[in-house]
Image 1 (cartoon, rainbow, N blue to C red):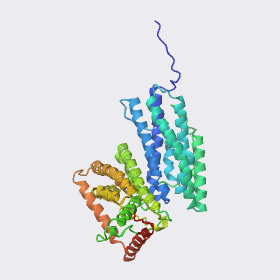
Image 2: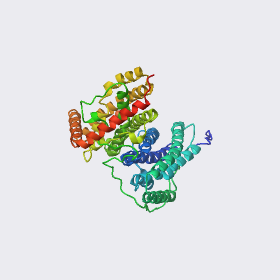
Image 3: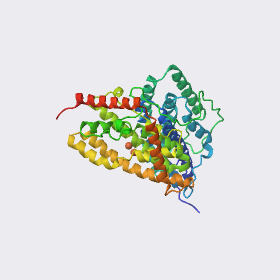
Image 4: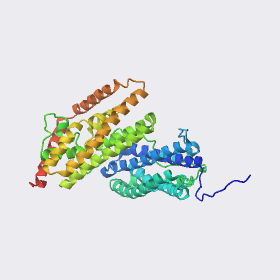
Length: 439
Ligand SMILES: [Fe+2]
Ligand SMILES: [Fe+2]
């Protein structure tokens, strides 16, 4: 009996071999998504705190495509174990254990992101564009993302370096060099179906087992009052209209920094318990809040403000300090979407003032917040269910406790702190007179 034979020049990997490699890539990406999210509260520099969420969102998209593809290739198996890649998984999990923020970013810039960029490039060169076309499509996007991220991480590193001391710089250098040595000894991230991992000692100087920060690091260039606007503690203080409304909205957007940090904190806290679908939503949530904070920052700067005139507070993050992190989901779900009903009318007012940028930002923000409200309901219920609690009655209890926690934080404010915020708000408003034009 004779048979037909054909040659496929690019058939480098079998279906299961391809799945094995893509699963390895997923493990690496997932570890970096968690590490970047967990670190956000502890990073002071505003531009880094609000840009890293875009990176982790891109990494989540790559991971999500990888995971889906592994399931396709291994159907009907839905197992995503680490397999033989445990040594590599340990090195990626160590990313979060950096001794300081500069070291963390340097590790991403010099070691982790380049290792993935290189692995994806090698996989793309070897893979079959016909049989494995779907993988090629998202890995090409991931290669572009990683290349851009590496460039941006270089500028983040410089910004963090400006605010670091010599001790932190030395620790960061030693950390990144040691990581690089370990990664090299393991032959990097392999694009081969079976990677070989020589026994390597993980000697990482300054390694600190990562513990999520309960407080937030703040960029020293800004003002740091306890509250960011008088209406945070004084319901009589008018939200205002005209310039007052433009300013209140922009300062509020800037202060969504706390929401960015909170989304990062909950992603890290509940990735294991709630699983991958939660990580997908939380990464997007985090990225959205970072865009809202940046919208406010950009508008304020374009009107002429400097960071040192602007209040950047953290009382909404601080109010859940030391509490069960379910209240962090509650905080971001309730307090961030509270004004959703007013957003369209505010956008309309901005349009009437001819402030098309505030209007534009508010309309995009509105679309994000609608989605976040559903994230909140879904994941608070899922968490309560996972804990054997009542998913129907529970969310109300979580919301009530969040209200209580915020009230306690407000009650902890001193007269001097209230006075400080009133002065800052008055100065911001007075300063606007020098920027405003009648036309
Ligand atoms: Fe927001
Ligand atoms: Fe939101």
